[in-house]
Length: 284
Length: 349
Image (tube, rainbow over all chains, first blue to last red; front, side):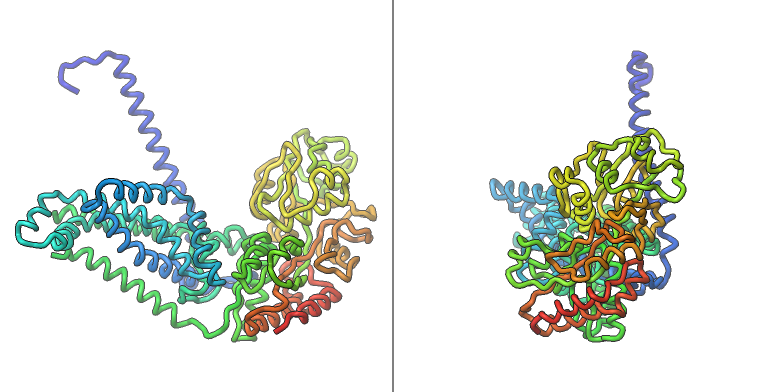
């Protein structure tokens, strides 16, 4: 407040009320998250032990067992999706930021926006029609395809923003030093934008890691070890879903354990994204 | 001037991915994996039965996923699974869409229990006639202290609170069996609502829940609620269930023996004549039914089809049905086991 300036009292109270209301809402949002995390930890931690992390699921009535195949399946499916979404997403972002102009660029941006608004179950059905029905069997690959589609709009948007954030003078400098245009983009602009691109990538991975709906009709689920993406595969969030709707206490406990694992994984990814961002800005 | 950080990040990513591949390939077996999908009701039984089967047949594993009866039929028709499972046989329209002769095999037997939530417990369990159940779901009996309910339960202190009827919101074989029962006992229900995997629920004070879990949850949370869940589910979750007066006038609870008595009235069950609700036998529980599996009579992949047939023959046989008994299912009567064996013999492999 400027020294000596006197505010009309009504305005001061309105200001105070504003601070209180927004503060209360922030506390509510943060509180909800803390309660949720606390509840999942309280319910889930008893389920987590070495056999939960290393063993296959057991059938009903046989106690113990774990979700190891689901963890492996998640890593493989998300891994394949990342490998597919990364180049397409980054290069599209690059095109939009550097070369894209006029109608074509606007149209691509519009499409990416529409894509990001599609419900994930619809994308799962799309993958089902494209890869499950014609081949006559469910597969980890069809799930990875659905995840790729989910990741793409996020990747495109963050990559475009990241590359746009690099000052045009940097690119001009590269040209002035005699680098060809593609060289300047590849060796100067992209590396400068990299921390933000990595952040976007990690957030996109975190986004799909918790998805269940697109897996129902693609990955299908499995009680067995399966590393072949051409076959039905287990996936952690899918396993949580199956266990959660079952009538068995032991499975409920394992569902909470799985949920805790997933939350931990997403948390690690988010922290990774923040680290990538802070280290990148320090270097610059 | 590649930044070290991201190179390390991508290297770690690729290494992690490769490591997980390597880790996963080690324990992989050379067994043929069959896939099946459908009924959530049979899932616990199948998961135990197929696990047991694979221990003595190391060349076969069965991956069964419980996506619901409706989903099981759809995936079977789309030929994305080796077999489908449902709590209701396929209807003529579905059979037409399958594009080949379908063999339907009875595989499990169970009952549908009526569960409720009242503020004070009813000694000996709430008693409901068949007509009262239908009138509650039709929305004609709306209060717990309705004279009809008080007359049936003179020793209970029934409160003056509204009855909330809970039903399945998803397409479900359990709903089929329950609505089949209501159609049998009430002409009004039959004309107004009918029988199906999902129906238009008539009452005004009615809510839906997804799966047995959803219905159980709604009943547990709502004072004055009434709902229907599978027997195995009700037992496993220690839910209070009502006694129903059957056609013979006897009060019966949903148990293994009363469901077995209902099944015994129709030894020659078939995919076109499968209903065992509201039977007139003395001890028969009136809301019971079979689950079915589907395979094609003339499959294209004979090798896989033979494995499927062998697994299902074992599953419908005495050893596996004994396992079903330990999981609160009702083992198939011997005559029905025989029916299953004959049906599976029709599969050309």
